[in-house]
Image 1 (cartoon, rainbow, N blue to C red):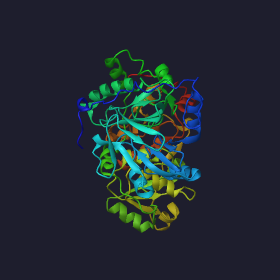
Image 2: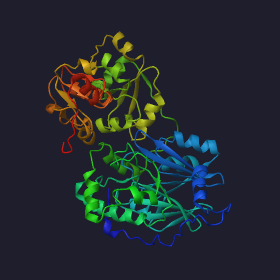
Image 3: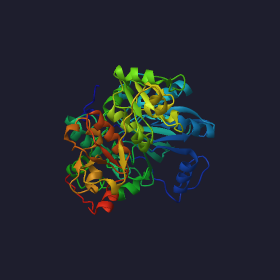
Image 4: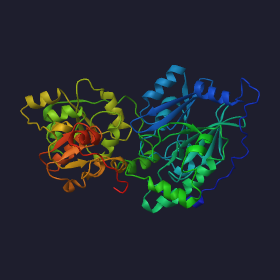
Length: 494
């Protein structure tokens, strides 16, 4: 992917001419004059669409005439479509703040389905029809105006979008620039550009902080997103609130800002490295709802023999009770897409083992929104059919904290979680790095995370790597500590 050096990005228009919203201004039915008006606009015209699994937010803005603006919509458009249908809206504009590294954009699909004009950074060099914007460019939305603000940092081509009613700023869609009490990570283009982008992020945040205090901050990345560094708990804010509470905005100088930002960077899923280019090229338009075909046991066996993978999405306890040897446990929940994209390639066919009551459409859309389309199908009849066909199964011990015995403790949580509190003497290998470091895992371990789901995934990876006598903790460090009299400890240097 071609990138643009940050020093070549020119900011054409200052933000200063925007007038602050004053509480004493006269109320007008056609213009937002007061802070109360601004809050009412957000309540009446802006719908926040949260993907808690990926930790991201998209936005649907009712433009007041049956048309809508969508900002940073993912390829899984189900929630957005429902919100638009409730309001009787057609999406006329689909704006993307950056070439997302954690989900495929839904903008191309909205262009196909609704005739939406795609708005995005000209510096992103997207290969599909769109209106390329540079710093200061404005789009007339039919009463409201969207102004592009160059805010490089999270990515080199990042734009924020300032929503204006006449001369007055309503809010700013900040994508992965200013997020609640933080800023998004700057290492997605590689280690050689991380500091350069962090310094660009410093100037971008300072630029946004020049906006009036009352301006709403509508970020894309938030709690649970691996793009956050570190994550916050709130989804939206205001410029004034961020100036009071965001530790990065409180940094006294650029070097301190860079040090603080980079200190918060942890690992991120492998699939992040693929999606920026996929979004630049544009995801394939879907002309029908993707399905998950039925497979019999013989077809699943053939898929495995041909180099495919079996993913068992049942709850951890069901997997433990009996599963296809060599299958990977990734329980179907909000974080399913993250771990699918972290642990398996998108280039081989995948078969799934599901429980009868699981939502297959949720499974399919979580896979599709991160670019996993080689979904061969699901095993019809589940493990009952697998065994009836004469195949064997493997079981994994899934035990409570009082039944762990003297096994070595393997903690597969993220670095920050481990540092915040872990069992003394625990071996720590993050789940995302376990395949590469399976040889470093202790023999006969009790594998643990926060609740048990990631630990069961880890156990399935270790089993595939040839480890035996593995047990999974049904619980987390606090449960283990209470049952074994070994209080958790903190280690900020782990």
